[in-house]
Figure (cartoon, rainbow, N blue to C red):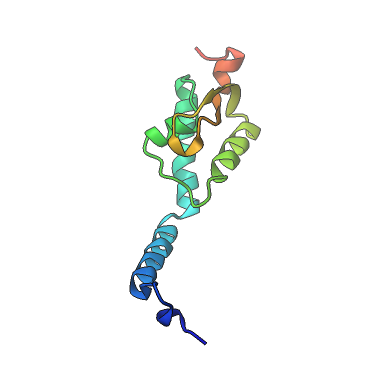
Length: 116
């Protein structure tokens, strides 16, 4: 039986180095810290009255979460808490999204007209 190191055409040292690098980059993204950082930026954007989407939050310096579905959970929970409301959609400008839809958000005080 062939071992992993003895398979022809596979540079086991390079493969191990790539795997170790991927593992450490996953560890570097702490989902609790990501959530706090992202929530802070979303709440600032909501308070400003600007229309925004996830791309705008990224542009403000929030890094990618450990799992992409964390973006949806973030926006859903802030909507449920009453901080933001959806007001439309736009197409994504990111290559990875292939012009997929992004929801547009605004702070709730600007939807209800309570802003001064």
